Image 1 (cartoon, rainbow, N blue to C red):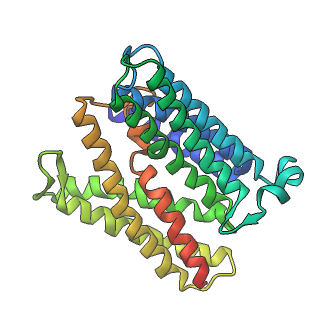
Image 2: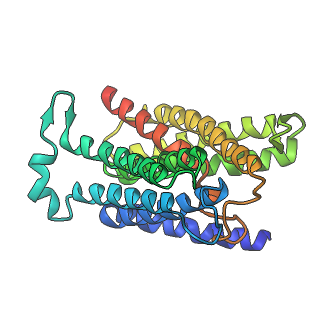
Length: 297
């Protein structure tokens, strides 16, 4: 089990490194793919589909919405001709919004409305819980993961995006090691008995230290001052707290539906959501903190 988990982790890190450095369309394609897989894992676990082996109409609508959403992201990429063709119109501002933002919102709204249309015209075949889970999955999986792309597209985003994984996966590792060595007080006894308060604190401290070290390297590679060390430490500290909330949220959902893992795609880990459960909470938080940092930089 440990061997499978270790080598799976190595492969995952290698894949993230490749698409992270590639950025652009490849990054959008990668995130879109794991969003679709993660979405199906979530909807299957939460009983959206009546038949576990057959994708439901709600899920097909959700997948269509996710694909359209990531296609819109591709339109904004400088490496493709679409931005030159439609960029001026897409980013034209009307009031407090531009057309691109409106289109993004429209995709999600259209997906949810389409689900309700299926619900209405097939009544009483489905119940409202199936729709709420199918709609929530769009935000919980696809929207949150897309913030990694938004960070990558920022100035120096090729460096900044790694703050997401330092806040989540470094936190996971440090929390596991510290909890195993010093854990005595249960963090959430009924939800996740193996997690300890000491482990949670160790995860936060480990992420903050990793963020500080990364800040030092970032300052050496860019024109930033060494004050960025403290900024990155704070971002990773806050991100690590949020990442643990994401991990526990995924555990709570699985316990609600008596599911051990979301999937079996990744040996030793489970499914996409089992590996990215902390990342989907961390990515939006890191994005907003980085944007705040840029305002005062």
